[in-house]
Image 1: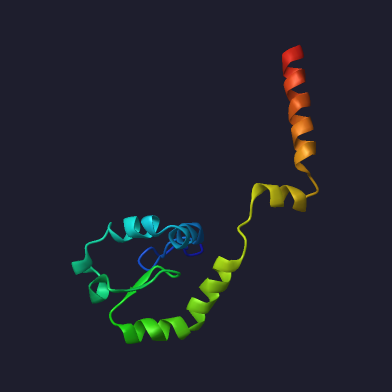
Image 2: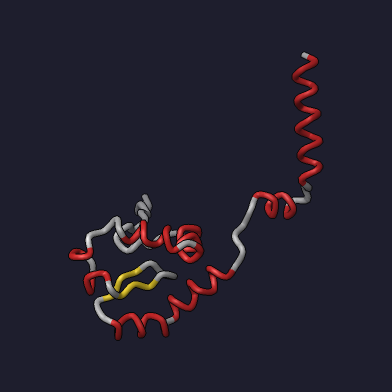
Length: 113
């Protein structure tokens, strides 16, 4: 039997949609930061990378992180447009009008029965 693959939650960071909301709204970011006590965070919560949602112990570590590959990859992922249902439908050849017409026909068939 194969081993069970479990996702590690210890180092899990916020998802991209949450980070995008943090970047758009300072209120959203402040709300996230207020959920944790600053005494429990590295560097008392003073050194925080918004894009990666990670805390660092001092400014040197934060600057080194910003020069790193993982941070740059995360920035690139944040610049990409998020996938939507409309894009998925277009990829398989459906248009929104086609889906709407099909939905209306299904409703008409249900009303006739």
